[in-house]
Length: 148
Image (spheres, rainbow, N blue to C red):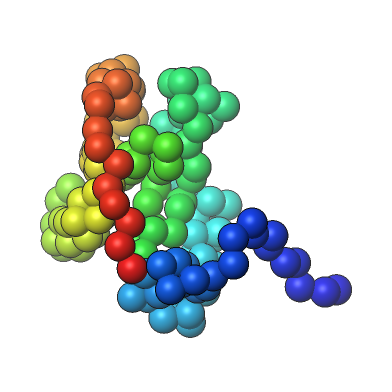
């Protein structure tokens, strides 16, 4: 079967690289590996991710969310691209916390807003989590300038 081609209105230019991963300084091999891992994580979500996805899918909060989105060298659990918002679950304790902090910092540096919740927080009582997400979605924000 032939490779699927993506259509684009604008041709690549000096301002916008042909390979989107170059803007994040991610090698094509690393980007492909991240994409495969994101696909696997979408197929096998944690119980907390499944519970939150039931509340975020189909624009239930007024905005479209995507699951397991590759952003640079990280995979975001949930991303609302129009609002530049990422929601992460887990990574609040132990060695995972250090990795999560680095990931959050990388996303924040490019202008992405990050909300992080513990698994227990989502599973025990999801309403405060949804309230925090609604509050962040309602906040005005400035779309960052895209740099290459």
